[in-house]
Amino acid sequence: MRLSAEGALGGLRADRRIRGHKLDGSRNANRRSAETASSSGSQGYLFITAVSRADAKLALNRHGEMTPGKLGAALERTIARREAGAVFLDPFVKIHSVGENDNMAIDFIVEILSGLAIRHNCAICSPHHTRKGAADPGNADTGRSAGALKDAFRLCSTLAPMSKDEADTYGLSPDERATLIRLDSAKVNLVRRSAQARWFRLVSISIGNATDLYPHGDEIQTVESWTPPDTFAQLTTATINAILDRIETGPSDGGRYSPAPNAKERAAWPLVREFCPGLSDKQAKYVITTWLKTGVLIKRPHEDPKDRHKHASLFVGKRPGNARSE
Image (cartoon, rainbow, N blue to C red; front, side, top):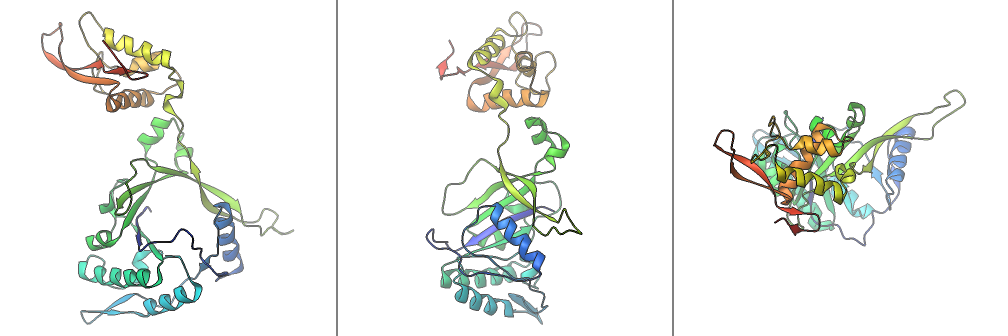
């Protein structure tokens, strides 16, 4: 299941660390948390509590009226005692018992969280599930619940698995694709929104509980940063210019190549594969699409001498080094 709308209310001071040292729960749960934090290079101290009481909610709906639950007061005491700089409540749907599509009810909960963040100068983050359907990276509206939730959050991000098209573009196998997830900015109020996804790979690490009877021990899943392979690594300046020369010449006397990825005899992407056979069809199409976005290629109507009709056609806009074509 995908997660969405990671919201932060209030600011986290850069010089402030989470203080204290406590991991609640079983011995192995402590190990899992400690190994995960260690693998990510986290600094400071981490407190984890699994809340199981049915009445431990931020808000309740009693006879049609919104009333605060016991969780808010408990959080207030804990944040103050631990001097917490960041609080994560996961998942959002479990911290209340109101209708999640009720804007007034969700806004009531967000006001409680906002008050906590302001009074204690801490950040509050709550991972939240998405609606059913295809992933839509970078769209804050994919989160479940009323719109008041994402409207109130200062920062929203989406977390989604790698799509098949993305895997094809990067030349990855289905097994590799299954381990990769992307984090996209969906809403920002205080900083410039990033247009680039941050990629992560799911990895397993040992939690160090091996024994003579259980020599391999257990593993826990965590993530590490992952950088997509560079589709353009094979495209030297000489190769790019050779491809552009062929595009400028056209497929026939007076004809031009088409910008459409599904074009037949006028398709330009086979030229990329001709000069770079190591690239897949999907990667070759990605190269042409990227060149169109960056102005290396431009499209404009051109009359084809074969049928005397004007078609959208490719022309060289600029070459490596931003030297304009003649």
